Image 1 (cartoon, rainbow over the protein chains, first blue to last red):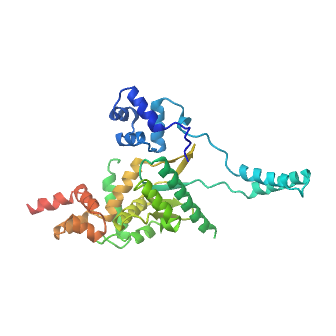
Image 2 (image 1 turned 120 degrees about the vertical axis):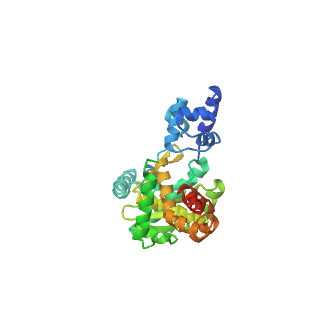
Image 3 (image 1 turned 90 degrees about the horizontal axis):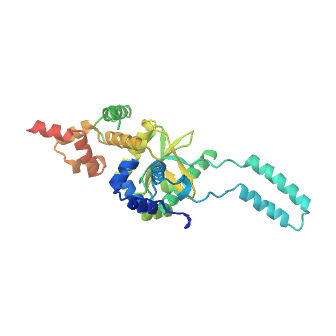
Amino acid sequence: MSDPNTPELGGALKAERRKRRLSLREVSYETGVSVNTLSRVERGYLPDLKNYQRIIDWLGVPAGTFLEASKPESPTGTLDLVARHFRADPGLTSEAAEKLTSLVQDMYSQLVSERPRLAAHMRSAQTFTPAAGALLADILSDMQATLENEETR
Amino acid sequence: MRRGFKSEAERLAAQVRTEMGLGPYKPLDIKALVRHVGAQLRTADELTSLTKLQELEALQPGAFSACTFDLGTRKVIVVSPLATDERQRSDVSHEASHLLLDHKVREVEQLGGLSFFTCDPDEEQEANWLAGCLLLPRDLLVRSLRSGLDAVAIAEANTVSVQMANFRLRATGAERQVAAARR
């Protein structure tokens, strides 16, 4: 889900292009990004990483400008949740809760596997709307997980 | 596309077809091609929900056609069930071509709430070209034209789109060759 506070690449590109009074073709010449891709980016589509970097470089802004701040994910989340449950359990002394938390942390770190990186060849569009891009990433992730589960069966 | 690739691709496609026992004239057996490149073929709805695929198609038509996963122990080509037979055959040939050309899979980068799908435009062009050679070899096109078939009939006989047949007829020079011989 995109953060409404995160500035949009397309809007920034269009504004800068107008400020410099350049056509899409001229920006294409300066960036090496095709006119078609630039036009789609201005309409809210997301390009691939290489073209994203080229546009960012042309705009002269830091690379993270259009990205949401990254949020920590599990396993921290899972362990925090378990620790909170142990601390809140009236049947456990605070020492017992800490001991259990520590035990679970040890076991968790031994058993948790790094989330596999999502990798594939794709025959697909070259640019995506943020919503379509997010859904496609989710679909690819589903497919890879199903295939990996078949491996372990 | 690098210089000389187009001719290399025609030769590679001819070699693959010979190894598959098809020769230059038979329609490409897509499942046999996938086996030949050492991969498995699945439709996307076997691995994710059809509803998600339909939702993606509604959000952005054509956003996803096919992909290949390299799981280390096996390679799997996944094709969208929402496409026509012709499109699926083209998409699977394209993916098999990536494997024949030893193109490496690329990671999807998820940064700051956005997903970036990297692709190498040169590799995509090469896979497109080789897929065309596999589906419609030049010899097949020349023989079909000589026997009186047009692009529509060639497309139908080989389960490819008319657009693909027209593209290959022009790109290979088959159309010019046969027309010149008739003059």
